[in-house]
Amino acid sequence: MPGTLLIKFIRSLQSIDYTRKQMEKLCLDYVIVARDRHSVYEALFLRAVTSFEVFLGYEPRRVSVRMKSASTQAPMDILLQGERYMTWLPFSQTAKRALIYLKDCKSFSELTGGDKSMIRIVTKIRNSIAHRNPHATNEFKWTL
Image 1 (cartoon, rainbow, N blue to C red):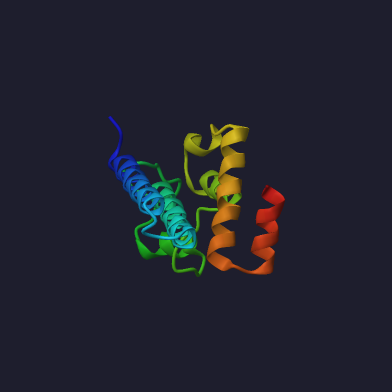
Image 2: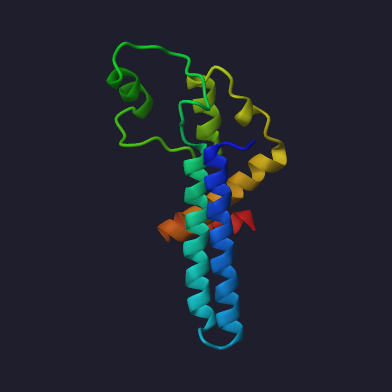
């Protein structure tokens, strides 16, 4: 039986796909123009990536932590390293964090080269949309 986070992630993707299909219908019926559809696609793509990042995030029942502490704040300070939240993409960060902080990082170590490549491509596309600067655009162009 899939976990709660996986179910939420799947439902999020289904909702995104439903909206995409609605946009296709509106475009085919000439209710909206392609430019508007593309803007919605960008937003839907970012929502999908964000949903994936939430899916990757920590849930106590899903992972076994390598360190114990009487204080709840001390481990959070170590994990966050001065940041407000942990970033899980790009994937290289995910793999490194999993090795450092998790006892059994199989979910990350068992990914194939193709899986990792797809995550890298998605991250570059996400950055190109979200940041719209020459560096992010150039990184995206090298992906094609």
